[in-house]
Image 1 (tube, rainbow, N blue to C red):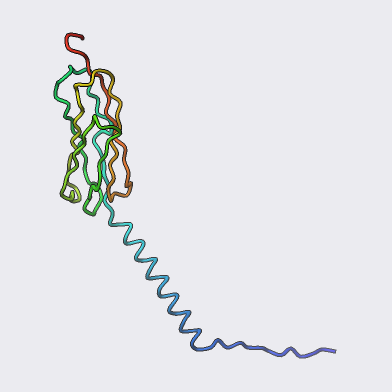
Image 2 (spheres, helix red, strand yellow):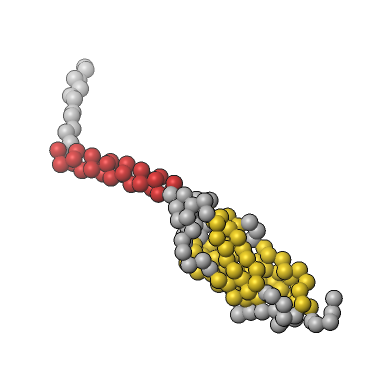
Length: 146
């Protein structure tokens, strides 16, 4: 004996339909916003991430520069530059670096310290890679030695 199947239909409450639409619109909006935000980022590109002092005499000029370019499409703001010890004094640019423009981070090493130079300089910025570690190396020779 065949039993006729009854059709059950479920109706969604109108408020629930409206909530679904709101959630969908919010999701699509947030997705679109996050994709747009990724397109507008600063990007820092250094000419070199290591500066080699070579062999320098004690008391000579210890100032060197790390040159970089903002290859992103938002202003680059360098918020902090620090060194691994007190013998190295970094100086950051104060103004934002606009897209396509170049800047420099100046590093001064105390050349009154004789011996090898192996120091790190940490750069913190709003770039897509927010932390970069730069290196200086070389050797300070005592007076009269070669």
